[in-house]
Image (cartoon, rainbow, N blue to C red; front, side, top):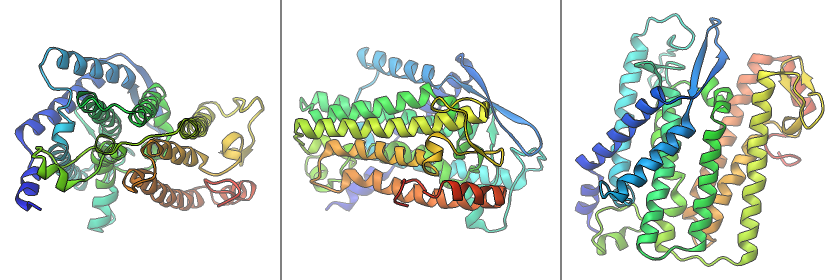
Length: 387
């Protein structure tokens, strides 16, 4: 295997840098200028509240439109991303690392008294680097946490569209690719349609901006959530003299699904979507109006604070179950001939179990006896009657 080729492919090119700069510049300008609903975030410790302009759907549609027009006018190739997979991966990783260096240094020097920007330094370098120092750092009026999540989700869609263009260009569009692309598009569009719900999630409320979040949003989400289309077939790429190593799984592996398998795959996606979106919507509405009906009935509330109705009365963090089913539905179109396409749901399972335990510890400390009462009323965690 040609290690020189591998090392060369890992070096970011000026083209990959330009693609990334244009992408981030667009997101910054569109996020600041396009109209959108101004959504108040949670109340912080000092009584203040951040506000988020939820115009992600409009920004996404405009971005895809510009991408399409640019391709039609031959200003860029629709396969620009799939042709430069590893270059863009390494460029984005380097950007994430440099961004975290700046955020870490800024957080250590911060004298802010506000809850959002007040530094939280443990003195443990690895802990502070990984988990972050500030809750909601900003740059030129842009909330970086909200910006990074948006960049990751839009980047995921752009990668998928570029893979789809490559698939069409090769004349090998398959039923499996259509299902995979359809599920991902629906999921990403739904995310931006309900973008305001993001403001009441764990990521925005509790996670500080550390390398875990920066790398996770900018690198992990777009480049591993699309792994169902990806296969590191190094020998094939080297011998075919392509200029990237990050190959695309469904481009290189033909999967024939039976009608029953395709229908079952659709049901997994639908059930996952209903649980994921339903649970998140119920929690968001409850935080906005604690008396709002859930499934046509007044909500049961533990200690006046914790929702124990609807999906949240069935299992703690039932939204994680929906997320796992959705991840599985993205992989099922690839069949069972290889474990590679199942990397994402396996990783997500480990991540959500870990996150659920961290949240359990946080809620135990925060709510004390109320949380114990809630756990007694809702004993199941993520998986009803199993865990």
